[in-house]
Image (tube, rainbow, N blue to C red; front, side, top):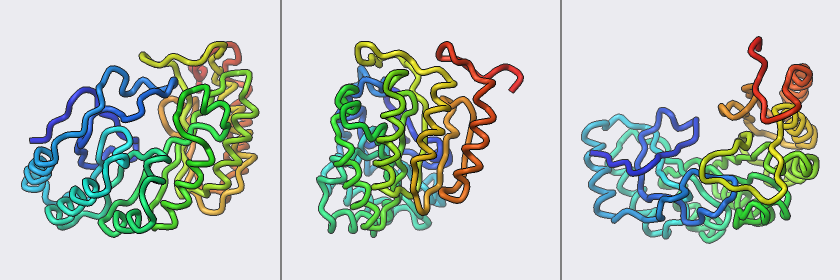
Length: 286
């Protein structure tokens, strides 16, 4: 049987994927904005235990086409461990189309170009990368443990190897005071990355997270204003954009650059109806 320990997290797009928890927790786990793995000691599960789980699942669901490997930053596992797991999945699931996972920029950059290409050949498909912000100072303040420059390099290298990168940014991460700088620096970083997929989530206070001193939570109005500024700064050539996470005041989806002006217009029409005084929710009538 498949064993899941502690809390299990996956991107919304992986709702229909078969999920294997090949590690527990996150190897970094110091991000001030994230409570996902707080209190969970990082541990990589024994290889034979994981491979046995693959074999059991293959007997039960041999038709599986999509697999997601959890937990946080599975890309941090040694290359040979990743290759062994992908080899096994390809052998056991004859209809397998793709394997996706979370990845930090530094973990991608630790792999050589040849290693990234080899993983792509074994059907590793989409890497979910949390840029969060392009503001280098803000990345330090929230203890991300990454630089925007390093993450830009990682995404470009991964995509050059044929992998897709789904890049996530956090609206409201800078609070009220640094919103403009956060949006503009994030747009600049995304323009350098040119990710195939882009998701905007809104920072909400969660148990286990402790933001920097002086942080003031952005209101729903602030978050939408920030998203408008971000969209205006984007110069992307072929990106699927989503802001449909439940943390967002309103769900959005489109293709950039084609739908940029329509998305901005929709958000501008929404602004007058949003709470400007606190964390806020959409008005009940919406």
